[in-house]
Length: 290
Image (cartoon, rainbow, N blue to C red; front, side):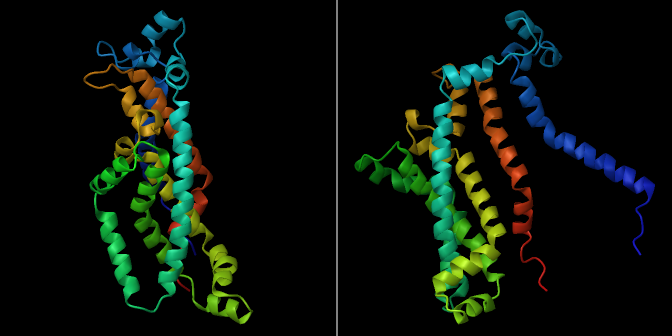
């Protein structure tokens, strides 16, 4: 018999959940709201209510909301180029990382030799190092071979940094799959690779989706590696947003940066909402064994 939660406890739980959701969503909602204002309103020091009612926005554009920030970022400053570069980098990083990670993770999970665990430890040590310290080792050959500033070299470095994580994550998923499935497939006439492709991968598909999403987020949100390895004409979105803010020597446009931040965040929100069931099932795979 299932006992119902007391009314008072339900009210407290509901109130806490609503409060937590508001606090978690407020920074993005506030930034989204402010992206349709002018800088004098969104960053008003005289009266914070200007950010709500857009008094200076009305004086400048004749209405309380304006898309000038988005037009300036995407059209005037060509933010669509970094968006395309980001899509290219993320696509190849995810594809290469998953290909190597699934094959390597499967092989290490089925290997009987002791060196398999040592390889995983070495990969973990490599992943624990700050990415920016690893980038310095690539700089000299990239400059000597005239490979600095282009997307392929950045993809290679991001895959190298991300690969230990995907290897560990996929290895743990493969370990939760009984080896009897491989043996049954072989009895039915499959080779080792056919068993991997037709039997194992469909079983652990939620784990692949989860790992792919984390690999995508690493490439999508990276700043240190992409800002160092990419030239000004080949920037991805995150370094370009930082460029909108300006430097000591160059003047930036804060509202372009605000509009670009919202533009870069919305795809992540949509992606997580679309794959939330796969993510949860992938993260909890193997947590309970029957």
